[in-house]
Length: 498
View 1 (cartoon, rainbow, N blue to C red):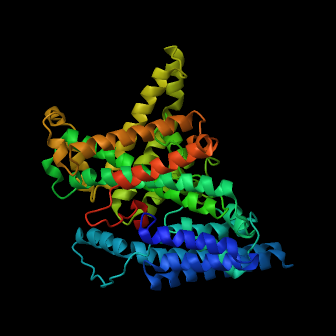
View 2: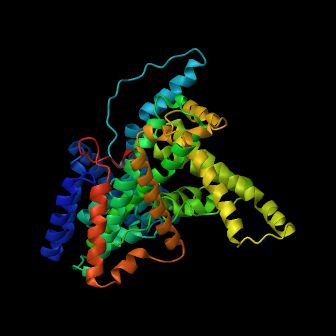
């Protein structure tokens, strides 16, 4: 069930109405049933995988809690608790590996063996990637690790814990919530709040605007250029398509996150912010503080820091960064393009850290004002272009395609900006101009957010007639200018595939 579908627009009001009408003891059971129905709309059988992951991490949490309270030699207790933790990690990551990476691993191994004259007979598995498996697996594993560390209690109510893993607003594409935030909120049934309803509705409308009006429109252009005929397009077209893709994936994933946050808010649950003006930053390090925050902080807390973080010298720190970003790239998909994308971003971080002392000396030597608008704008431009280079690998279907597209940017044909050929690549002139105008609204909203101005709260502070007018106009814009597909089919969110 997609958020931008009629089915969801019927499903959500029913879930909300029943949730606030039924007695408190039944509220989490109702949300659990609704969440499993929501997931089973894609593939009912794969709900069993989520149930298996839930059962394993639930039992491991209880086992860690039991061993933690039991009197026994300290070293033996440590070994037993580590065994329980590794049981959870191996089972859950094993399931994830089989469904998401098994074919990729075999193909990569086969390609390597061919170079030495060997060939591996490949078993024929035809399995469909379960929607959102990477998200709920990481959320469940985060809970196990938190219990192991003593950061959260072991949840004894299985149904409440199952709701934590399957909570439908953020089930299939995040945010990847922490047990310390979401599990504790789900333990307390909520009463209806008109404030939460209004704020949640505005969140959702903004998300629908990002997804349907901007992301799905830009996708028509991006998919045309990043097709099998990519070699027919010049450098300017590739640059524009990559720029559009950067905005598309931001609006697609940011739109999903906004809808998820809004739907949860209506139910009285606060989800973490997943994006914070990621393209209005002056360094790659700051970019990762504002892009897919729930995932980047997950890898920081559960991969980078356990590897040693920056506590074991600079060389080890840089290695840990590369490992973390390589793993992050692999998390996004079973393709070497994602791994290279992750490694490129890790490389940016390492080089930025190494060159930091030199940059500071140059700033002091040249008497530059780092707080000036010009200096910030230049750093912002450089950072954004570095992001675009990495996104070529993220979007391309192969490494060779990514390299070819980057190479084509050397040879620019500026006349494509004036001969009208851009309007024959999936977007006609009217839609192209509408896309630019919509991106301008996004830029304005992000600039206001960067300055600490929350447009949503400004709207909520107005009189009732003004709020009604804004809501009516917002819904009208989404319905009139949204991209609904050739036969009004809802387009899938990009991050569902991860």
